[in-house]
Image (cartoon, rainbow, N blue to C red):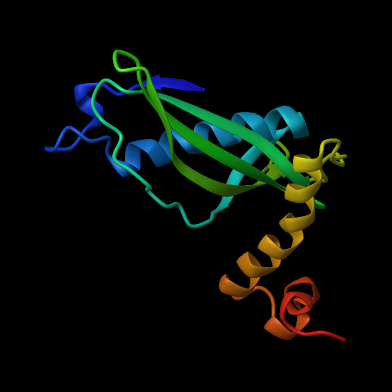
Length: 159
């Protein structure tokens, strides 16, 4: 997804407002999730979003979104955000994040999502890490006990 940073999108320093970027990221991620699920999806969580550098008025934003893993009724989507200043020819990664979406039917009830089969080395790495990221999200949301997070524990404790 591409967006041009216009004056209405900026703060008093002529930098893109963070909330506007999060809005654009949510749209791009939702489109990616909906294409995978072929269903309505709703945002369930947004992981830590770091702002590595300011995005300026007039920059062109490119948001790359891809589903990294499908669980039973949810999908994880990775986002990479690039800011490009066309006159200077510079392009830099400004943000990255993971969003989670849940597929729902017309009544708002959760429904199963299609399986995801990673193919490339990068897709396999993202897919493998998704379970750990999911367990961390669930722990932080109070929906999982840390002792039940076997994938996370395996990072820290040898059996």
